[in-house]
Length: 136
Image (cartoon, rainbow, N blue to C red; front, side):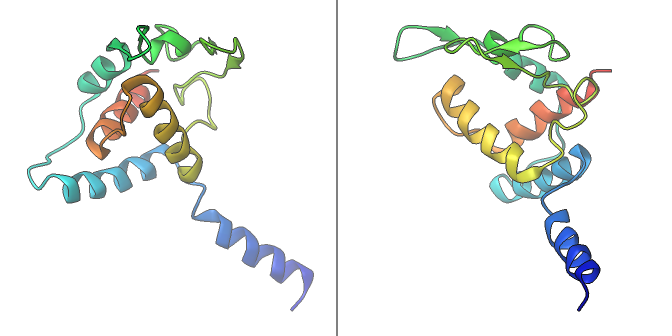
């Protein structure tokens, strides 16, 4: 095999991790049906509610997604604890957001635990992503 063949094979193998947000949404729909046989569809409205929902933590602090990502998912955010700048969540403002499904899943796992103090369901992730995709 030539170097080019190895490069193409490697890119194809990695391609599964790089997907459009719509592909991630379809994958979440499959998961949501497995979690709940009555699942019908995702809702941008429920996703927006989740984004702004304030949770009282065991630490006594009240947090929401907007605590770090601002009221507008198109804006730059700032981590509440570290002050580090956070790129916009909305794919319309940050084309790389949700393009890598493994990376997206990692951040869902971390941020759901940080904000909700539990894992998010596939339905919640899909609703959340539907909301972010509705922002133009």
